[in-house]
Amino acid sequence: SFENILFTGRSKVSLILGYMENRRKEFEQDKVHPQLDLDLGTLTYNLKWYSPEISKKVKVVVGSQGMHQTNLNAGPEILIPDATTQDIGVFSMINLDLDKLQIQGGVRLDHRSIDAKEFTTPEITSPALHRSYSSLNYSAGLAYRTEKAVFRAGLSSGFRAPNSSELLSNGVHEGAARFEVGNARLNSENATQGDVSVDYQDEHFGFSINPYFSVIRNFIFLAPTGSETNGLPVFEYLATTAVLYGGEVGIHYHPHGIHWLHIGSSVSYVQAQDGRDTPLPLIPSAKVNTTLKAEFDREGAIRIKDVFVQHIYKFKQDRTAMNETPTPAYHLVHCGIDLIIATKGKPIELTLGVKNLLNENYIDHLSRFKTMGIPDLGRGAYFGISFSLDRQLAAHVP
Image (cartoon, rainbow, N blue to C red):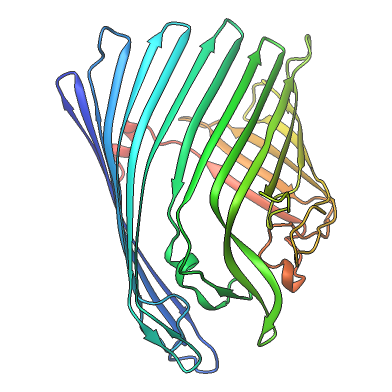
């Protein structure tokens, strides 16, 4: 990756270039020659121009983002055929700062083209494919600030073109142990979303709420069919009009007189169904996330910075789609401690903790291993260390 900022007087230009090469090989009985040999190369760019301030109140950003991606197969087994995907998007945003009130608006034009070659295996034949997608979208939002609160509201449209996996898959996805079938007739997703939020914070208490409502036309999702191929469940990509709504509510409190104690909790919920009120598959269950943390400010060669206990409760997800199984509720408890070790230079920070302290046996509703009955991770410990090197020390490192 390469990132550079060029200052041109009172304006500036930002450029980010990136390239990723991903080589995936899957071996079966023959440990030398892979059955699946997939080479994915992705080149991306992100170019932005930031205008000078206009009357110290208005800022304009103009930019372009894009991608060039190639997918090549060298093995006899093919999950996604050879294909080239090209994205290009241009956009403009304007920000208006009126002291307590900030207003932002933007427009964006996107285009994606996908070219796939014809391929044939002993099991299937896939014809060549050429598809292109375009969309013009907008966003508008405002934020009003008071001494202790921020009120936000936004309205936007969205666009997502299907990718090569959703269009062209026709084989076993070994990472999820399922047979995936693409849909070459898929159109691009188009969404309209409205959301509001309120954030309040004073010396001892914080509160936030963020509800949203979204309608997605041609919503693309992966659904179980109820059938099997070679002992593996078959999933296929489908599209429908989807309605999603939900939000998150959170509080943070540290009592007067015992500022070292922090209590935080948040509740998140999402409900999703199609135009006939039928539940959509693979929708996360509601969650309550609560953390109790104690902070310390004592001196010493080795001192405790903070200690925390976190409890996560996932509700039962029984609002499931056809051929999708429900998931029972479960609890998770995590705990940890941060230590500070004083040195002659900058201090060293150690982080130690235990995840899933009670060794809960559970399977998340979105787990790829759910169809195989494989549970998520049990009890596990982690350890981290972080330290800083100042410039003088770094300059003497050979």
